[in-house]
Length: 325
Image (cartoon, rainbow, N blue to C red; front, side):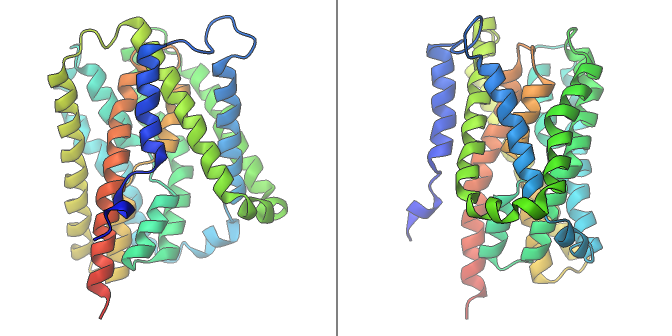
């Protein structure tokens, strides 16, 4: 077996490097500087969602709505089942130092699904590719509303400086408006976006790396990690893996109960278990701006992202081999 195909790409290593850099040299580009890191990130977030809107084909979205049962199962898993698995534990962690970890887990649960990796893995496993494309696309749009809605229920009590009205303005100007503008310009920019898809993917990852550095810099400079033990971090890692496997088995069970064919079952399992680090990072830059624990809030989605890429890629290859005569 060629294990190189399952190894994480440079992006995973880059995430770890940004955390290390934030620990060793926090605050690069912050404070009174000619070029503010926060400004670069803000512009980058706007461009990410503008290009996201530019990629979306309204005609394909409309035609992809036919398989409504599969779409509904995926979106309810993503935006309802995930949060409801984490929500009952809130009373155990409320008003304790561990509440930061719970908020991070809930943030992970409230995020939309990935786009590119979901489609690629579904394709490898032999699933419903048009269904994967539709759900990955519509998940990002729904997430623009649902993720801030879920987080708004708890962040007001988590941070005294949190102002939801200010966050709504930022969400509109940095995320919703660019997506809408991209959708409007899709007929004129679809050839250009197709030609530069790989470069835009690299641009997304670079902006995410900057967001991770900025978030962890704030956390390290505020000393938020000083009171966190390795046991707590290990517990967080285990909680993320438990959540992943719970959803993995739930989607398998749900596909069986709904009598999905093999292709739709694969799409439900792969698209329903994925969570987007792209959306997580850019939402964090808006929702957690000025909150000292921003780095901790990003930890669960970073762990989840790395593990889902490895495990789902192995599972997809296994399904591919099983389908071959």
